[in-house]
Image (tube, rainbow, N blue to C red; front, top):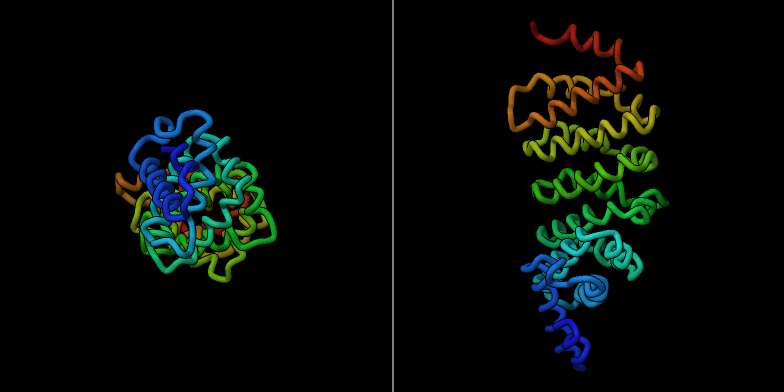
Length: 260
């Protein structure tokens, strides 16, 4: 099928074959569907399926296939970067189509394992800010992918931690993450906050100059097995901040306000 793609001369034929490649990458483990070098060779035709004149279904299927490919290894992720694929993929973050936005964020969540793509987020752009804003999406899968991507970015980059507080609504975003109805989004959100505290004392001081301390303490008081990971991560946040001598006085004040 892959070589048949290149043998087709018409635009319609290439488009149909490209969609067939997308579906192959969705329905079969990409390591089996595109073994060895073929995993690199299918990147360009799949990226070509991301086209404004193509249907939402064609774009969606191509994004899902690219998401699966990006999960394979860094060689594939490097090829996506080399083909300038991320600019095409990121355009779908602004689409008024929940499935396309979700699929694009899921590709990004896999791509942030790539060192070069992490450096992109450190540059003079709004990539971190946009992902942070998307964490407030009601669609749980989108929020999961964005919070997962930010958890990886903030664990690897102090610059990305600083960028987390660039949106004017940064505190509202942290509130949404800490009190998220999804246990998994909540856990990833608190991981992000923990990374921000560890990576930058300036950022940590700004965080604890708000009500985030009280909210994290509230999480540690929860009795919910589904939120056990979030509870433990909140405890680690407070322990790290204590070790950095950031919150002892604030914590004492908060304890005074806690009911007996």
